[in-house]
Image 1 (cartoon, helix red, strand yellow):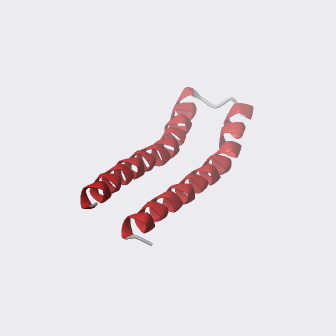
Image 2 (cartoon, rainbow, N blue to C red):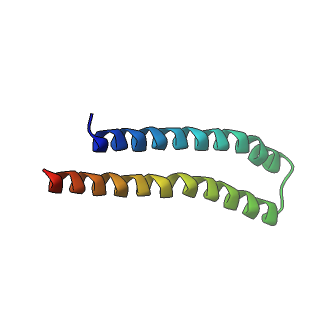
Image 3 (cartoon, rainbow, N blue to C red):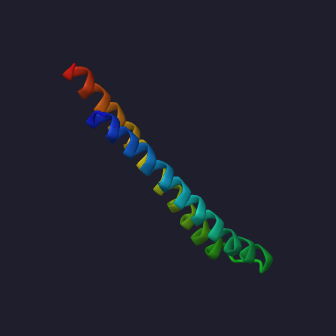
Length: 82
């Protein structure tokens, strides 16, 4: 197995683990949002909650974009080596 194939596998595996971790974060945040809804949270508490959820989303999106960039760079490097 080539080094680039191992790197590609590790990048994909890491991306899957990251996504699973963030899904877990959303599941853990759901009761907080539901509680805010039930108790009529103020605008500030809703704002803080939405910022927290956006942070969770960005922590998935940015690493996935970086993984795609790294995969592309590894593919170009492998093409140049051949």
